[in-house]
Structure formats: structure tokens, C-alpha cells
Length: 290
Length: 292
Image (cartoon, rainbow over all chains, first blue to last red; front, side, top):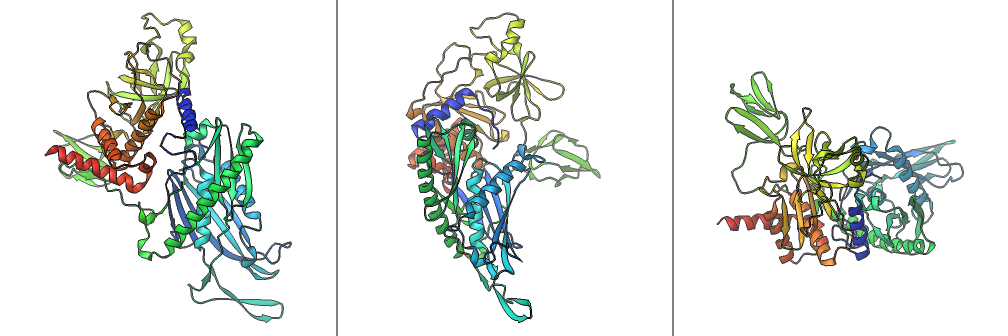
């Protein structure tokens, strides 16, 4: 992602640290940096979330709209992702510099949600073959501090958890044209089952070991890594290899195993926190002022 | 393994200021004074005979000169400052270094010590061999020798204590948080050395031994585990102090280090927001106790 210059000695220091299981900031190889999460920031969106992972700052907004379903999937709604790398995030994103990264993240998210295990799209169907809910998930990368895939996936999961879809009733069928009635009560909504929505874990390989949640300096020292999307029940829904270096099949297998275990832990803790946030009153919203 | 917090659980980082009198703080566009007869310095502008501030910071007044020193800005070099820079370019007879200033600083070939300490005129071969001394990405500690007309700094490493930096950890903070002291190189009792560049770059490394290698030889051996722990802890302490906008100098860093050890905090716990605030409050309390 962001290209940082490092001297040979600094790289050697980071390498030895990873071998010793003590990284520059005292974390072990499988520790995440502190994450700060908040949902319900954007009042215009049906669901929103802001996630800060050390320096990385991600804002996600979800909007729901009615549209016709795809012809080959008449009983399902769909999710559309769009990632925007703001030019404020890092100097490399100036102009169209962030487009490649944005497209990569977008495509990876689509792949990880494509499996039927993650989200039940038939919940989004309103009228078979005619109307369904489409969830437009817009992701804005405000600041880039390394490990964007993880931060984006956790933010998307939180936003989808907080999304409220208005309940809709099919009124009388006027010949061929059905009439859809939206409920008058703005709080009469339904929520999605987000238990199995995948969390993404990035594992970078440095020397003979791999680490979770790399900082930009550690990303610079590593030549290869994998990005794994893990759903709530420890199933891997998508894998992508990043970096130009090569991976031995044995290390790939052990990285996948570690990734799925870490992903399951992250999933559980995230769901617990999202549940906790629901019990808070509205007056405790912090927003962007801090 | 993973720590997720809600934004409402994060304590607000009030600026844990030193317990001196509250200074005259201004924001961009706020009125400083309506009186005439003052000369306006950096960070101010005149409109309708009134003096306004153009940056967010502290008003400083020296006789008739009023200027505003911003809290967070690029580094403004003074002659004699110790800075740490990263080489971005190797050009003809000079290196260009990034020192968090508005322009890249310049390190001329004649301003560095040749390995072995020879004193001679630099030849064409020296010019071709520049990349063997310093290449792109290397970190150098140097002193500001001169300031060019356009504001770029001219650095020199003409002393045994300056030169290429070896293994360690670099932290970037705002230049306004680094206090000007007699010496910026400290060998801390916890087993690490620290170099506080005036430009906001703080370098923590294993204890420097005084060898006369001229500062260009790099030691790439594995750093022992205890040293590595000390360096990581110091790094987290400095980041915590910077987060709470406290001045960074050897005493405050050592107070933060001792506070974190006495509180029994693990090194990675110092990354958590509430622990950062705890450390900053303990350092401030320590300073208040010392004053009495």
C-alpha cells in the first residue's frame, strides 16, 4: 500500500523482532492494534459505521433501495460495494492513484460475500422476480495506516449489523402491478442476520514467520502475504495472495489455519461489542469531534 | 489478541499541559490585538488595523514583535539544531534528506566525515562512491550548519556523535513537542539510547558504544531480547506523551517509562487509549511532586 523508505538496519531490526515474537511496539505476531468502533454516525444512511485501527480510519455507509432482482436469481436481493480512497488518506492516493487499491478491495469484498454461507440474500427479497432490496455499501478510506483490508471488512460488518431495512407490505395486486406499502413508522424495520458475515485477516510473511495486522513499516519489510476472509463459523470464504514474493505450500496452509482461528476470535469480539453498543443511549454518540 | 472499543469508551485526551499559567491560545482568524504599533511576525496577518492569527497556537510577544507559534506545523530549522533525516535522493556532491521541513534538507558531500576520519579534499572518486556511504532510505543524525536563501537547511555530520543510524526504531512527532536542550543524545538507564531530533523525529536504539568508526559502519547483529523490550516500551511511552501533547525530553520519557514499569503494564498495553491517559497523568503528577 503506502510505500515507505526504510534503511537496511531498520529492516534487519524488524526481521529479528518478528523472529523474537516482539514487534517494534511490543505486540506479539498475532496481536492487533487497538480498534475504536462506532455505528450510526451518518443519519442519512440506513446504516453506518466508523472504525479506527491505529492510524487507519474507515467510514462505511449503507443505503437500501428497491430494484429488480437479477434474472438468474429472482428470489434474492444483492449487495453492491464501492470503495473510495480519499486523497486525504495518503499522498499516493492523489488524483487517480487510489483507484487500483479501491478496485482490489472492492472485488475482494464481493468475492468474500459471494458464498451462500455469509449472508442470506433471500431475506432481501420483497416480491419474487420483481422487487428486491439492494444494499449499496459505500466505503470511504479517510486515513491509511496499514492493514486496510481488515479495517474495511470490520467496518462493513458493523455497518451491515446496524442497517435498518424498512418493512414493506405487498398491498393489493392491481392486475399486473403490485403495490408496495412502506410502513409509516420509521422504527418499524428489520435487521439482517450478520453472524456469518466474514472478517478479513491479513497475514504478512517476514522471514520464516507471519504476522497479523502489519504496520506500514512491517508491510514494507515483507514480500508476500495472504488476505483471508473468514466467516463466523471459522469457514474461509475467500483468499487472496498479495505481494510479489512467493509462498511455500506448507506455510500457506499454516497461514490459512492461523487466519481462520484469528478471524473467528475477531468475529466473536466484534459481535459482542456491537451488541453492547445497542444498549447504549443515543446521547452517548461521539461522532467526528474526537 | 484483539481489543475493540466503542468510541464512547475512549477517554477524551485533554491536553495534559505543564502546570504553568495558561497561555494566550488562538485559533485561525481570532483577534490578537486592536492596538497598533506592533510588528507582525509569523502566523499573523493584518486586516483593518487589527492583528489576527492565521494559525492555531500560542501567541508569543518579544518587545514589539507579535508572532503565533503553531502547535502542529512543519519543522522550522535553526542553526545548531540536531535533526534526524532520511535520505530521499543522492545527487551530485550532495544528499537530499527528508526532515519534516517544507523543503528537503541538503547534506553536502564536504560536510560529512569520511570513514577513518581522513581530512582531505573530496575527489571525483568520492563523488562516485557516495551511494556506498548513504543511499536512499538511510537514516542520518546531523546538525544544521546553515540555512539557504530558500529556507532549505544545510546539514553536517562533522562530529563523531553524528552519522548514519543503525538498528532501532523511529518515531515521528510534532516538532513543537521537542524541547530545546543542551544535549539531544541520551543514554537512558533502562538500556537504550535516544536521539531527539528538533524536527520531531525521535530515534530509539540499543545503547550506543563509543567507538571511533566514524558513524558509517552498521551493526546488523540481533539485538538482545531485554534491549528490545526496553526499546519497545520507550517507543510506546514517547507515542503516549505525543498523543497527550506533552513535551518530550529525557526526564519526561524516563518518568513515563518508570510509571509504566511500576504500574506493571505490559508493553503492548501502552497502546490502549485509557492506559495512554493514565501514563500521561502519572507523569504530570510526578512533575508536580518534584516541584514541591
